[in-house]
Length: 284
Image (cartoon, rainbow, N blue to C red; front, side):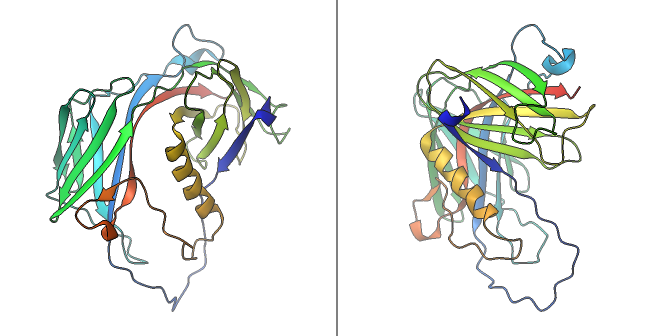
């Protein structure tokens, strides 16, 4: 079954203990960064818990509260983040002609408290900042619930590592998925893959580098993407994996947000309206 889809393991983690001096780096002009991932969290396993008994305890957040962040790229070595304040931020449900206002609650952080998600609806991001008009669209795609989670140590690539086995039904339509696992104190693991067997259950063993240990509290999420979103995130990860912590990116990766006023001054970032199946499990 695993030969029928392609999986990409995303591991973005850099560390270095050495101090670098006299490093020559090109200082580009700051560019606007728009973080606009709006997620409708749902309980990954909806129904009676299955072993281990506490894996069904996750309760979704208040999905009416959604946040968009505007900031700027920083010169190399500048760890202080600069935020874009005073912007006008809206998201429009084009299918229902309904507008959601995002008000600035902290510098560069814009929030809506009455956002709603509609099946198959087209959403449009509209930002006015510094005399520039930024726009992007995203179609809301449902993500399947997970049928069950199990644990093992014999189905993954490394037989000595504990693994989380995931099973869900692949609905018709979009065939691109993003599965993420996080454990406090360990590197987050992301798998982006394509699975195109409509109606056939997906079953795969996910591992975490550094090894899952008994007692680890794992938070896992599943998202379903269309092909353009999948392509963006896969290229982003490919680029990150192919270079070291001090190399300059070979190419700039554009997101789906357009500067309508001056297309040459496009922002970084991405606009996505998505459903996210989320749950927790304690490793046995």
